[in-house]
Image 1 (cartoon, rainbow, N blue to C red):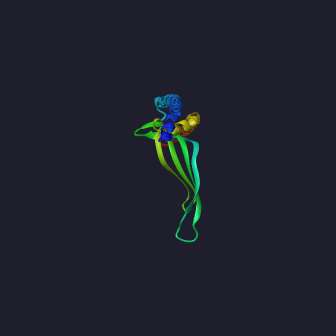
Image 2: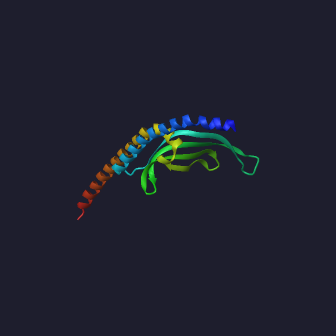
Image 3: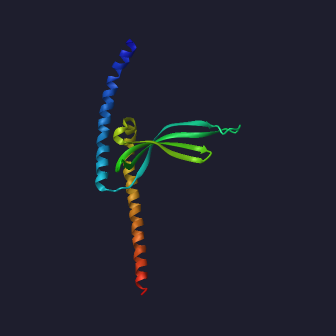
Length: 163
């Protein structure tokens, strides 16, 4: 039992450092989320953060032709709707390459940024890229809306000539 007591004592130092780092990371997430919410941008966006795990898996199909697929778990930072409002979120995506149904990607778990300490620490580096992705999507949508407006104006002008 002395080993357990020593191990628990050793936990105190990293715990304090981890709490301090987490507190420091909370501020930019909170400010970015508040800012995005204030803009009412209402656009979903997602950027990759890191690979959590990858491995090969054997798929048995009832014959001697079992095949191996590549399975990966990836972390993404997103701005998405959670419980009725847009939030920054961290999502775990499972990807299977080479499966019978082709390549697939499935959301296995998503959490608001403030509910995922380990993911949040990894995800902070992706926050500027996520904001840039939201800007890119917003600019694209504005350009498409401008084009639609021009087309609508032309159609209305043509219709006004028919009397």
